[in-house]
Length: 242
Ligand code: SF4
Ligand code: FES
Picture 1 (cartoon, rainbow, N blue to C red):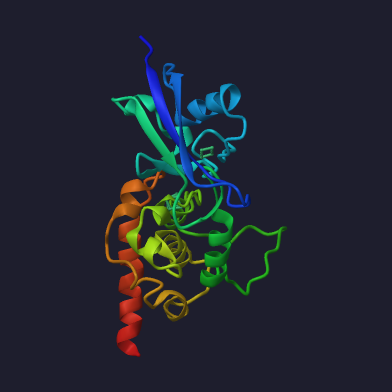
Picture 2 (cartoon, rainbow, N blue to C red; picture 1 turned 30 degrees about the vertical axis):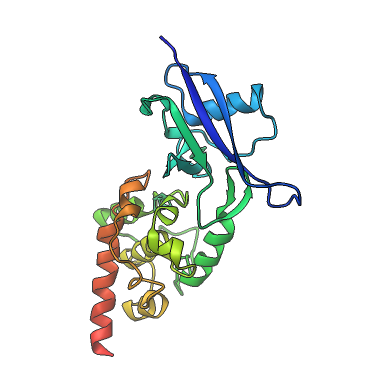
């Protein structure tokens, strides 16, 4: 039997001089397997066409729809309303990122800034020749790199991290995961010393105090803590030689 659920949504438009942060509650009929994405779409269609939230894929792939659900960062398109037994769900925008409106935040600005700082691209002097086969990489190493490349840049590991909330320059699990990815990839010619120069400080690998929220909340189940430890071990070894 279907039930009524109450969705309490944060609303605010920072661009408007008259807008003030507030919550609005909507009561809707829950349908089987209803996700928060479906619930929000119904609210927009029936009650509040002005409500803003982000989505693209509706399948946990694009990373756009992350938001706080009863205080925990989650993907709206992968979160079932039935998970909330008392039928009361409060939605807020992710912290850390710039608020665009209501539940919509600008993760791109934060990601672009971190991507530049950690130089989030493959570094090599070799010129790619399309007529030739790619350089060979051991299958297990390729698998390890692909595993870390599954990050969808949703920002949940950042929004869930107390250090990232408190310290604006911390590259977080997202940034350290990218460093681990390039450090694992033999096609990237950077040395451990190069990575030390990028993340060998309090805004990098020494900023992490193992709160564990990044890995516990990552919707792709990435091994973030073990990868931060992997980078920290490499950087510690470099530090000892300095
Ligand atoms: S590491 Fe996980 S939580 Fe962080 S941005 Fe990537 S997919 Fe999202
Ligand atoms: S809409 Fe793409 S991850 Fe949710």
